[in-house]
Image 1 (cartoon, rainbow, N blue to C red):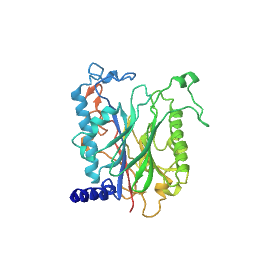
Image 2 (spheres, one colour):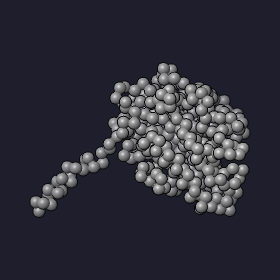
Image 3 (cartoon, rainbow, N blue to C red):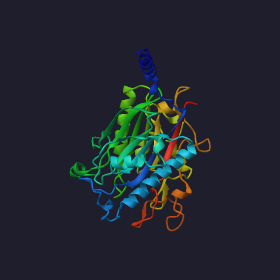
Length: 357
């Protein structure tokens, strides 16, 4: 009986430490547009018909499995370069939670033990944003899906009231939690497409929604560190990013209401994460609030990671890049001219690094 009692006492004494996190000093935080990661089944209410076996893309299980492998291969390659897994990885153009669950168990990345935050959204094509996180480094406190609305105090929209009523796009994902004892919030977004050529006001509104919610969080939780990431369908120099998300090119410019946009200086230096209509762009943007650039010593702060100058990284490797033909030198996408080419994505992933150094 005494032996059983001693064992039980040891278990009780050790329990508070069993789930304790050993937090790294540096963390990789990134974003990756997975370019139409659809499964082979129809989801009721979603326009996913081209990604069915009998659809336009003849999307078979074999192609789907190759796509999963390719996405995992890129995530693994980033881990190999950085020597650590992403603590946080936002993703877009995913169909549902099923594809996320299939992705995180791929042999290339299973050891990261990624957990998932995802909500089904109203996008007509059926694509959503989501977030992967490592539970040994990030403690999830809460999350929500923020809908797109037209209730702007400043933007005049080109859509009629009827068009606005029928408009459907991706929700914005908000995730709050802690890394170590510091509070963070992450926004993952995929702003409205450029198709049609008259959607700049919609992306500005999406940026405005993010900014409004981020400022409310900063008021509620003083000192919170915020990261905004996504496929913005705009460049860092565009109005949505500069005016409505208050993106600044240098750390010295960043005030309490602003975000530091590392990719603003990078696009001016010739970097790109995708080629849109033959022109290199950076739509895959990650921005951080003032608390991550003007951080107290010994707390997490964004770090320069490219040439000791740039604070963002566009990750590209030869295997991810088209090596021949019309699109040589651009991201090797899943399909080209309707034919499956076993590619990766039409976007390169981007990331930043935060550290307590």
